[in-house]
Image 1 (cartoon, helix red, strand yellow):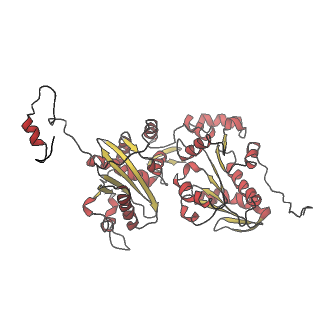
Image 2 (image 1 turned 135 degrees about the vertical axis):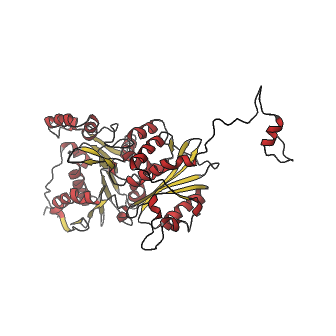
Image 3 (image 1 turned 180 degrees about the horizontal axis):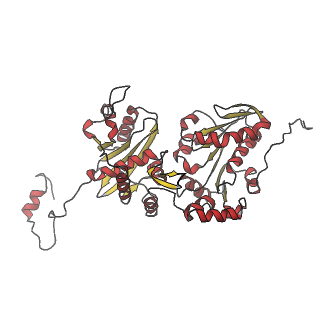
Amino acid sequence: MSDEGLLEVEMDYCPRKVFEDFHDRKERWSVIVAHRRCGKTVLCINDLIYRALMDGKENGRYAYVAPYMSMAKQIAFDYLLSYARPVMAKANQSELWVELVNGARIRLFGADNPDTLRGLYLDGVVLDEYADMKPSIFGSVIRPLLTDRGGWATFIGTPKGHNAFWEVYNNATQDPSWYVKVLRASQTGLLDKGELEDAAKTMTEDQYLQEFECDFESAILGAYFGKEMRQLTDDGRIREVEYDPLFPVHTAWDLGYSDDTAIWFFQVVHGEIRCLDYHSSNGQPVAFYAGIIQSREKERGYVYGTHWLPHDARAKTLSSNRSVIEQLGDKIPLKSIKITPNLKLQDGIQASRLALTRTWFDHKCADGIECLRQYQREYDEDKKVFRDKPRHDWTSHGADAFRYLALTWKDEARIVDPEAPIRGVFVGQTDVSLNELWKETKVKANNRI
C-alpha cells in the first residue's frame, strides 16, 4: 500500500511501442486498422482493463464484441482472465465476464446475437474484426448503450474491401476528434522480415496486401460478387433512390428459422432494378414480417406487386400445422404471393451477377449491400482451395434473398415488343391518322387537348 492509500498492482502486460500512444489517447472514438499477428486482441483486452480501473465510473460496464460469440470465447476470454487476475474480484465463465476490485465489469459478446446487448449500459466497448460484423450493429444496438454515461468505442480490424469498417476508417480520417492508426507489417517491425517475404510468395497479391499491408482496395477473398459490387460502387449506383408510384414494389424473401429472415424491397423501372429498402432480423414469427410489409405500405405509400418467397415457404410447421404462405395470407393477399423457381445454386449466383449490372441501391439497403459484398465461398483448410458452395454466416440470407430477386425480376418487368409500331405524333410523313390518334387517346368529351 502506498503513502496515498492506493493499492499498487503490477500487471503482466507491457504494451508494444506502436500501441503506447493508443493507451494514452484522450479521444472518445478510435479506429485501428491492423495487420495480422500484431497483437490487437491483447491490446484491446488490456485497454479495457486499464480503462475499467481508471475511468472512475461507479459500477462501470465494459464490453468486448467479436463477430461471433464462439470467437470471443475462444480468442479473448483466456486473455481476459489472465491479464485481469491481479485486479479481479470474481469471474463467470459461462457468461464470459470478470468483475474487478473496483466493481467494474468487463464482458464478452458476439455480434451474431446482438440482442444479448440490449437493455444494458456501457462505459466503453471494443469492436474487434468490425469488418466481419453487420454494419447496423453499432448504430442500432451499441451506440445507444453509450449515450447516458458518455461511453467510448474502439473499432479495430483488418480490411475487407470497401465495407462498413472502411466507412468508419474513412470518416474518421476526416474528423480530428477521432484517434486513427494504421499498422502495416512493412512499417511496424513486429513480424520477421523473412517470414513476411515467405508469406508474400505463398499468398496471392490481394491476400498479402489485405492481411499484412492493410489495403482496403484488395478484393475480398472468395467473394462471389466482388467485381460487380466494386463496379456499381464506382458507377455511383449506391445513392438515394426514390420510390416511383407509377410502378409496384415487389419483395424477395429468404426465410431463416433459426437465424435471419431477409427481405429486399425493389421496383423494376424500364429494365432497371431499384432496391428501395432491405430488412433483416431473427427470432421473429411470420406475423412480425407481415407487419414489416404493412408498415412500409403505410409509412412510405408502397403499392405492392408480388411477394416472392423461397420454395420452402410451402412447408407446414409442426407448431401451427400451417405453411409460411398460409400465415402470411392472414395479413397479405394470397394472390400477391408467389414461389421463386427452385433452380440450382450456381444458376442463381450467375443470375445475381447479371442482375447486379443493372441494379441501383438506396442507402437504406446498407446491411443488404454488405451481405452482397462479403458473400464468400467456403474455404477448404485441408486442400487450401475455395469450395463451390457458400460459407454460411450472417451474409447468407441477404445474399440468398437477392438471388431470388435475380431469378424473378424479369417477371415483373414491363416488356415492350420492339416490333410493335410506335403510336404518336410525328413531324413529317406518318402512317397514323388524326382519327386513329384520337381513337387511341382516351379523352372525355369535355376535356381540352
